[in-house]
Amino acid sequence: MDGIIGSNVLTQVAFIVRDVEQARIKFAEFLGVSPPAVVDGGKFEITGTQYQGKPAPDANCRMAFFDVGPQVQIELIQPNGAKSVWQDYLDEHGEGLHHIAFGVKGMDDKIRASEKFGLSCVQRGKYGNGGGEYAYLDARKDLKCYIELLENYSPA
Image (cartoon, rainbow, N blue to C red; front, side, top):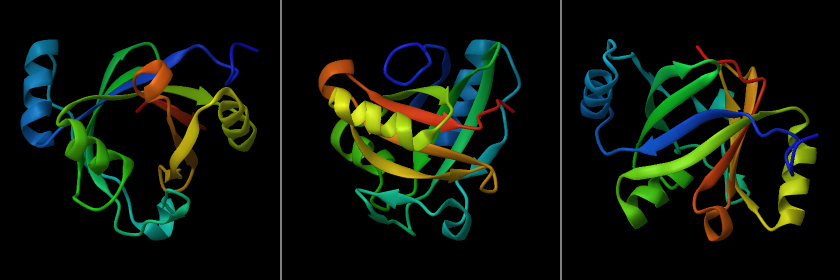
C-alpha cells in the first residue's frame, strides 16, 4: 500500500470557479480542446450529501471535466450558494485550487486512516447516479488543499 490512503496516483485536480461556463471555455482554449459539457452535481436523493456530518440537501454545484492524461482530469466546480465545502472555499478564498483527488478502495477505512493522520472529513456523498462515493478531507493545514477520495472512480 502507498501512503495513508493506499494510493499515490493522482486522478483529479479541481478548481472552484464563480462561472463554470466561462472557466470551461478558457480552459478549453488553453488546452486546445473543445469545451466539455457542464453537469449538475445531482439530486440529494441520489447523492445523500453530508456536510460537517449533517445532511446537506441543498448543497450542489455545476461541474465541467477535462481529461488531461491517462486517468487524470481537471475539474471545474461552481458552487450553488448553499453551505458546502465548495461554497465555503469560494466565500473564504475566492476562485482557485480546491482539491486533488485519489481513487481508493474501502472508503470508511481510508477516512479513518486519514483522521488518524490529522485530516478531517468535511463532506461526503455519492456521485454518478450513486455508483461511486466521494469524501473531502480537510488537509489545508499540512497539505495546503483539500484531498478528495473517490471510490469506484473512472474518468469519463
